[in-house]
View 1 (cartoon, helix red, strand yellow):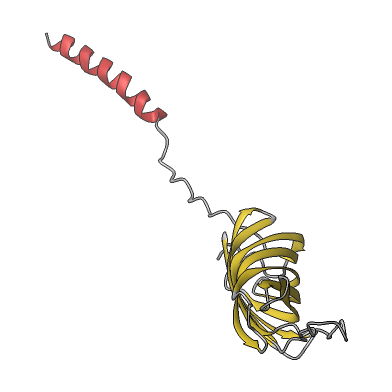
View 2 (view 1 turned 120 degrees about the vertical axis):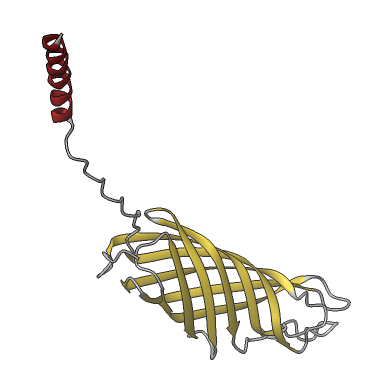
Length: 211
């Protein structure tokens, strides 16, 4: 009887010990780092927006205060958190003076811009922008939140405000009745819309940060 018990114990030990020996140490898997989006040296953007006349010099009769705007940016991103370049905005509004045919009144802003950013490699790329106009005396300010769709493409909302005295345009048609009118002096325009940006070139310096 005792020999049978001993035989059964040896059989159990012979099965369990090799099974335990086959189990290796548990090694925890390293955490996967979040995907990064390197900031590139050059950014080319286009944008479209709804526009609002924030200020207008006379004559402004018949000028619709809501219109549309479009523009483009060319930026050199010398560091992940800073870029500089050119920005163009052109806003257009319907204008129909009393007793005249409808036409368009426009305001154009061309500026040298500086843009600080607030992240290095995350999918979200928020920014602010200040610009000094070169086509006239004035300034602009903007803000946006770009979102990387793929490595070289960003899309996001953009708001912009530009202020500059605008040329009302030359008078024309002298001697023709009714007398011609100068175009409205649209001095300030606010915009809200969408920007699409393509990034090209090598990564900016220090773009290996994780945030």
